[in-house]
Each structure stands twice: as structure tokens, then as C-alpha cells.
Length: 379
Image: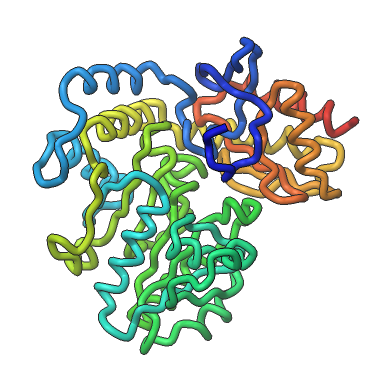
């Protein structure tokens, strides 16, 4: 085995996929309610995205950001419009890189001495050294200490704790997920994000929303922060943007983005034509299919089914980012049993199963998934 042991041995090896279905090397069919961790939001091998990649592969793959390409400005304009306008976009390859861009931008914008970023416990922002420290999970920090300085953590959904931490003399930004995905699909109180916006405005601090998992229709809105009338200063995204092609992006209000000068930040592959062709096609399909409405419809159906399962005490989340919270901490056992029955779900915590199917998932597939989980939970 020549792969580094950064992952557990795989329980199954997949060879192909179509829509919400995957097929292993033996040809067995599986129903995918993980979507590559909320990545393949249009399903596997979507024909429009595949056709765009094939066409672009025959024209131009890569030139470097020393030069321009035709696609990146168009994709950036679409992202800016979906967020609400008035911003600029930096393209990269992953969510961690998008958050790295946001962290550097915050330091440059805030100036010397105001380098501290306040994040929340149980958050997840990436695996680079800086984004790992931003992540509010100390068990992940310990093996890699010392980590870069400049991060403070407070309880999620606690405005009083955030208020106490926001010292304008040292803090430059707040980094927060509109819904905590890896933390167990935790939805904050309805006034939490608006309260963060108010605090950040009062202290002259940036509000940075990590939408890597919640972005592009997953919650039933284009972005999770759009649950209320607020406007972040910075928004990071990745996962669903390329429907499986590695694409990330960091959006910032134009006044904030202006803190960067040429040479302050860069990436070799970010915004290259092949990745942008996938992103453009993905966004076109998302808008045409009205994925926000579809996520609301399918999410309501899935939630109702999950709430009826034996051993489920609560269903958390919005749209098609849901967690079935169990009465007992047997999520890994149930996920393993579901996989044996041909269904992929993610035991994100010992007592929580995360489900994030394609935003184009059919009612029949939702009902099939609930049926499998019903049988497994009953056993």
C-alpha cells in the first residue's frame, strides 16, 4: 500500500456514479446521501458539467494567473450576484484555502496588532495549520502544536461570549459557520447571525462566514447567512461550486478586498480554465433547476421520514443538510449497517448521522433511504 495512512481503510471502492447512485468495483448499486461531503450537489457525472469539462479539456486547461482567462470573471460575477453584489472573488482549490485567504485578508485589512480571529467551539474550517487552529476542536490541535497564534474560541450561538471576546484593540475578524456541519449540524438561534453582524459593526471587526458546506443551495438558500437580512464582509466557499471538480473561492466586499495588493496572495491552480468550466456549468444548472426550492422540498420530505425512525430523538438542520440525532451513541454502527444495505450516510458524531444528498435527489430516492434506515434502526 503506497497511500499514506491518513484515512481508515475503505469499506468500499467506487468505480462510477450517476445522479444519486454509486456503483462499486463489483457493480453493486448504492444510494449516496453523503455526496462526497456535500460536494456533488447536482449528483454524480451530471451530463451538463461533464460536457463542459470535455469541451474545455479540448481547448485549454491551464495558463497560470500571470495571465487571464475568459471564464474566471464570468464565474466570479455569478457568485457576486448570488451573494448580493458589491464584492470581489479570489479563486482557489478547496475550502481550507478559501479560509486561508480570508484569514490573510483579515490581517491585512485590520493592520498590525489586530491579528486575532475569534472562532467558535466545535467549528471546522480546514486542515492547514492556520485553519486547523481556527477549527474549534482541541483534539485535532494537540498532535500539531504549536499552531499559529492569533485564534480565540467561544461557544457557538452565544452572543454574550462573543461580546466579551471582541476586543477591538486586538481582534480583526470573526469566523463563523451559519450552520455547524462537522459539529453535528447545529443550527443557531434565529437572531445569532444578526447579533454577530451588529457586534462586528460596533467594534469595527470583519464578519467572515464559512459557507464551504452550506453554500450553493444546500440549506434551501444560496448561502446559509441569507436566513436573515444581513451582509457579511467575507464569505468563503468550495465543495458544491465545482460539483466534484476542486474549486474554492473567497468573496469579500470590495472595500475589504482592496486591502490586498498584487503579490499579497496567490495560488497556482486557482481559477484555471478547466476548473472554471465546471463551476460555470454547475452554477448554470443550479439556477436553471432552482436548487434552493428543490432543497426545501426534498429536505422537508427527508426530515419527515427521519423523524419517524425508531431511535431518532431529533432532526437538526435546514434544507438538505440534516442530522438525525439518536437516542443512543450508535451512529457509526448504524452507518456501517446502512452501507451494507447500500446506503451512504455519515456518522458525524457518535449520536448523529449527517445526510446531505444531491440537491436534485428524487422523492423515490428519499423514500428509499428512509426505508433502509428504518430497517437498520429497527434492528
